[in-house]
Image (tube, rainbow, N blue to C red; front, top):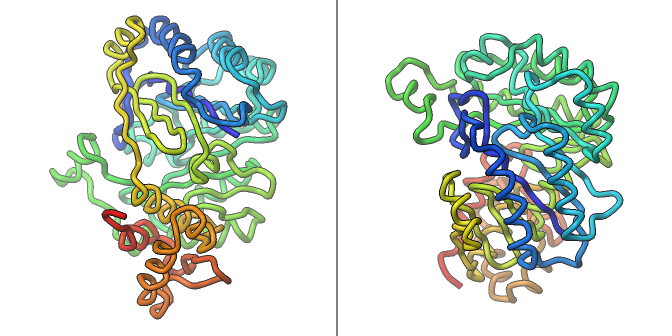
Length: 377
């Protein structure tokens, strides 16, 4: 199985924490969309799979700035190039302020069957701190509408925000659960280079949240959602049984995907590639049938390290049998030896031949995994 990802590089305004590629001007939107349609044709054969697409994902940026007709054209372009599974998950990322009358019903008619709603917070002061384009009331209003039209929708929430508290975070989760989402993606606020938030923290305009409070917010998130029937199937992902994100699960499992649009990433099982993060250069490259793409062939060590990182972030863990079959007995023996200190300190544990992160150490999993990386092999 495989996936197609469309990166829609437009936003109404810049969130203070975001370092994704986007433009607040949509004057070249038509040219970008035409180039994306051409790119899909040019790169069609790069997608290695069994010929079936099980996920089409619209990310960005803000895909909900597109018209329903533009979204339909992109979906149909995938159907023209590949066999799309009848049960394929077709997800659109949506911001609350982009809702307009009949928009949701029309999205459903053209094939979108899952929404990922960028709520981030239900608190007005936190939305202003992040410079989000929507306000709290718009979030409440759009969710009231969404829950009557879409069964399958996910909410994005951010914890670790400056000046937030455990109590304000509990309120955010309670607000989210009120609308019965089938999935919640929740990420800790990260201070990315070249962002307004980075500058605000460096100049003491904003203070980072105390790490103990951040950890308490993560632990409450985990405990509360699991108690509400969600599966905590990946560090930042919670889904009601049967509603895990097909798109993201494919990334973590190493499935092939083709990324279309400026800055979009692709993977064919061995080679990672990424498009130029510049709208003008992207359009010119496609027009010349020479897409501006950088590529990286993963070494065996790279593949092994990625498997450790994604495996430990997932509840499935890291399988010794898989490592031996995929990489060889040397890698299996190496891992068994390397994890002895983490096993002794109960950071990691064995579940049969599967290595897993302990619940108390889950918040630190990326660092734990990187400590096990090898530089060559």
